[in-house]
Image (cartoon, rainbow, N blue to C red):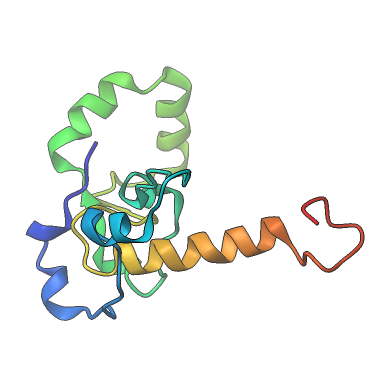
Length: 132
């Protein structure tokens, strides 16, 4: 499933800071013979990062179109469980991850990536750090 944020109207009411990302031309100016490069596409990693909680109530997925498909896939045990608790069918499910086409997604994904990298690498000055 692809969740496309450009058609939701949410981008009209959010703001994301501009930040510089290198283009192929600016990256080539930095290189010389013997240098190595890595293709690092954060766009493929959006789903790895959480959506801020303040956006979650307005960034859901409407389920009416697929409720009948979900009913057919549900096991008998799950159906009995729902009947016991008498839960209504969800009209909208919460979306908790970054998604394509959402203006703040690149900024938040890069920010969370660097926080995760800092946590994983740790302090290189510590003697117990494996990455010293």
